[in-house]
Length: 362
Image 1 (tube, rainbow, N blue to C red):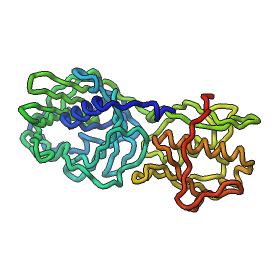
Image 2: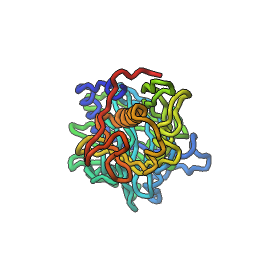
Image 3: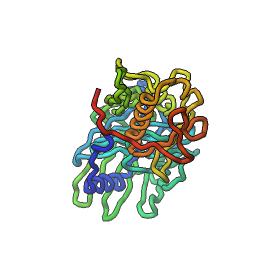
Image 4: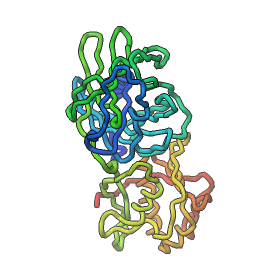
């Protein structure tokens, strides 16, 4: 299926990682598709009243789209998957990979505390242990304020009210310059109420890679997924359907999959759970690399089916979750206890295995 068809080349991953590390890019969003007319211009080099929370605002259901120049992986799409008052998880999509970043906001700075590449599923990672401590920007927002990142590179506010042209609009921005090895530089441009509008990386040989804001859209993130259902026929054969998942900022994965399981995305397919069945939790266990899903007690009586259809319903649930999280193993419990029905009983810790054999597209 889709998760098994993706080929991730080692060379491509290395190139993407180098670009990400050198540019040290942070992405933000706004709640309207154009710069608000009443937004104050940043044009005073002595202005020290700018707040970092305004330069990197955490906003929901907004996608920032960037055009890239100088490298095939420089274009980006950025969406806030999860936000709260102090933390934000960003999904960053470029032509080579998907990744996530977690930003943490304090009273006077915003920093990156977590990064993970090759991250194609959706999962709230805000509670994971921080593995980074990279300050994106800190107060006072004034020229000359500087700090070190990754214990190696100097990052400094080098301009306030700097004019920057992007395909989306022209801005007066706060310019933050990171000096890298051998004199290479990565420059980020932030605008109040918008966030990051441009990143320009200049290599030692004078070549440049640019990531420039080109559009801002409002609405949920769209993600292509594969879902499985038994056909409403005498054979109950399981089939797969390519589906476009719409994910709003801070959506519950449990609610998202409940809706998919209860209401087939096409006619002629059988719902995977009854309307009174609840998904208590969905958890991706990284130590065992398996999905763990817990249903309410209404699952089995809600089915009230024979062993053949029960097997196909289970296969559909397992395959849908396995493909979404790119794993072969799914552990199903009912109110915390191992799956058990009148036809099938699993032991503690025993899991179902993804099985695509003989499954065709609907």
